[in-house]
Image (cartoon, rainbow, N blue to C red; front, side, top):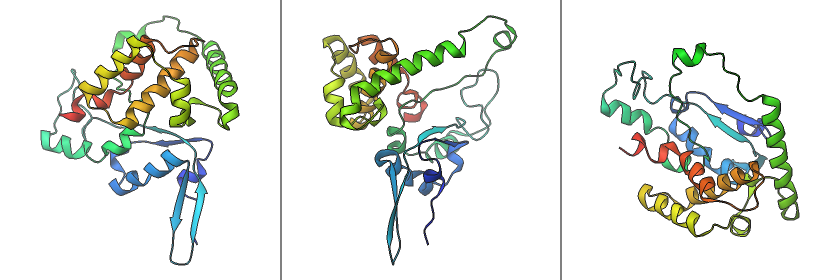
Amino acid sequence: MPRPGEVSLAHNGVLFLDELPEFHRHVLDVLRQPIEDGEVTISRAAMSLTFPARFMLAAAMNPCQCGYYGDTLHDCTCTPPLIQRYLARVSGPLLDRIDLHIQVPAVKYKELAQDEKSEESAIIRERILSARLTQCKRLESFGIYCNAQMTPRTLRRFCKLDSESERQMENAITRLGLSARAYDRILRVSRTMADLEQGDKILARHVAEAIQYRTLDRTYWQQ
């Protein structure tokens, strides 16, 4: 009897996958359906069951097995073929379905030791709640409540770009060879950047920031 797995247990919550390439390739590829559809279907000889699986996926990984590829302070012990085999465990179609790719460099000692006061979490929280409320009001008539759930139809309606933003998007798509799915996800993130600033229109700087959040589309992943 099929039972709900981790993706269904994470429904309406967060699914965190640490050391992403260490998972089996076929396990990661199976994630593509629930990420796209918000549900997972399990077929057996006697029956076919569908479980809810609308979750927020967060994943972490090293750039290679030793973890030092690209690090300026440590020498990487991995050979180029070994690095490529390690990175190839995460497929391009799966990366396409992840909105944000952030490369996190090692924190230097001076940054760790400094006592500079940063923005308080309570202020950030209020800004995020305000943006989510804006999204709820905009999308409630379509039965969805946040930008991540926008369909191609709602994307075209609420994510219109001006001429400058269009040129920026065209350059990114052409130079990086991004897919149509990546294009839609950049639009969603751009809309969110504008919502965080309480702006009605998506500006060129919002598109630029959204493109910058797709690190793995333009770095050593393609080498």
